Image (cartoon, rainbow, N blue to C red; front, side, top):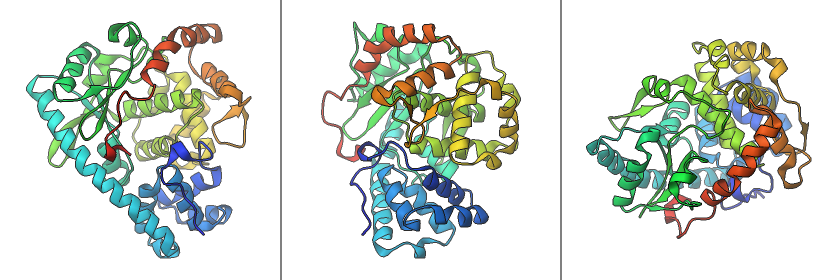
Length: 377
């Protein structure tokens, strides 16, 4: 009998799928017939086993799209197909609500002259998976300039959103230690970012980021999005934070592999890895770890060659049975040590920042003050 939990990553017994499941899913997404044939026997339960794993980790919709494109859906049991269809319908319901919210907020921000960049969500689903419903997501992520943070917060509040993120000694001080706040509206949640990440070793050039941004149309409306290379930086920094907390998300690993595979032919990897903005260590270590885990170096050969030139910057870690978790696992100590060395800073400097910023980070990520909208997942 196929067993899955009602929700995904947060209720999984493990924080990540096993390497065999990830490798098979990646080969399915990249339409690699030989890779599929090679990886499928290693997954317990075959495609039904992969359905169960993806259902626990928020990857059901991604898997459904890949199976449909490969004409492999008939090799999944009726029960498995029902599960995948249910998750697709749930995402369609979410998307209707999130689409309304995005259009309303975009109108509001445009009217007040506050530009924003759309992160992840429907843009990433459409671009990487061919369909705005092709990836499960439960909220909207918007990036504004740091100087627009206060006005953007006011606009969301005027529109009926409530700040879920708690602060320590006020939002001004807290904003120095975090890169975003969470808001809950009548129907949906918004994560408002004013930076790609927050760490004293990171010096991402905001003006360069905004000048390089691209546009992407959703429902015939253009939205600002990150450039390809900044998309990689954002994905890697986001995943590094999750690894540090001991809660890496499978969706983020798959997204990062999809991004680098899609842009490998034209990306300027050497210049990206040579940036003097503190992103070299995070990029080399996070991307390298993901490509290793998924055995996916062949999917981005130019990137893999560029990473090889920085092999000496890779951080070793004692891996546990749970992918991207390192020993000692108690209190996530192994992950914290690995992440500390991945940043381009010293261990003492990382520790000082971690201790000083901890109260602010804990406050922001505490449970919301009121129940979340029912469609938020």
